[in-house]
Each structure stands twice: as structure tokens, then as C-alpha cells.
Length: 159
Ligand SMILES: [Mg+2]
Ligand SMILES: [Zn+2]
Image 1 (tube, rainbow, N blue to C red):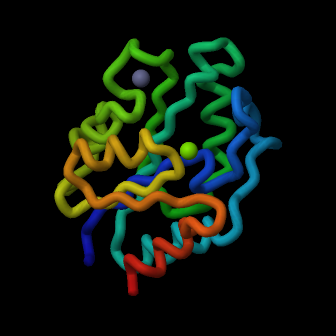
Image 2 (spheres, protein in one colour):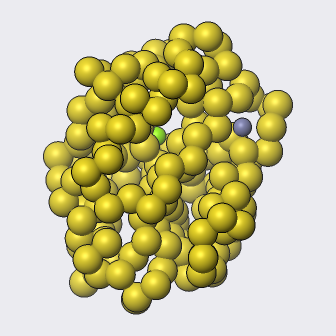
């Protein structure tokens, strides 16, 4: 299992997502989901490289800046995450917004040794799963029960 890449969505996968139509616009709004930090540490310890890929359309809508996104992402800076990629664009205006695959391709270009066929994509939205399928990765949908949590999936992967 060593050397593989786990692409993780952020909101709703690692941290609590904002209510529909709202965004996590500041670090004080960032709350880890139960077990999410442990999941990232377990994956890293088992040799998985963890990369976060996140749609943040709130930037395009003027609800927050890229600096705000960075400040939110800094709440994860104690975790072994290799890189965080953000799509700040409006729908239909780029190739990076999931279910587009641009962020995954950027990661593959910038980080050594990413093989999509050996990667997993973990997220709470259909667009995460669709993007994962588009790159030929294994996909895992997480969410509130009865769906598994990120920790459940991590334990399964390192099992
Ligand atoms: Mg999400
Ligand atoms: Zn984009």
C-alpha cells in the first residue's frame, strides 16, 4: 500500500461543511469532523500521501478571498498533508472545479510519484466521486451515518 495517494475533499469530509449556500469563510468556522485528524495521521503513517482538493466557489462569489481560504486551510497545518489544492472559480468556468480533474492533474504534475490508478478519492459529494472515477481512482463516499466517516475509510484502507 506504500506510496499511494489519498485525495481528500475538505468540507464535509475533513471538517463540518457550512449550511447549503454558505461557506467556511474563516478559521473560526473550521471544525474537524470526529476522527478526521486521526484518519489523516493513520493514512500518512501507513505510507499514503494525503492531498486535499477543494472547491471553494465562495471566492468567485465574493464571500471570501483566497487569503481567507489559506487561513482556513492553516487549521490543518499540524497534519501530515502534502498539499492543498483549491478551485476558487464559478461553475463552468474552469477545468479544476470538481467534477473536473484539473486539481488532480496539477497535483500529479507538481508532486512526485502520483499514479491515478493507485490513488483513492474520498469525498462527501457526487462531484468528488465523479472526479475520482474520471481519473480512474478508487472512490469512497463519506458522510453522516449510514455512510462511513473518513476514519472508517482510512481504517479500511490501511487494514
Ligand atoms: Mg465536500
Ligand atoms: Zn477552478
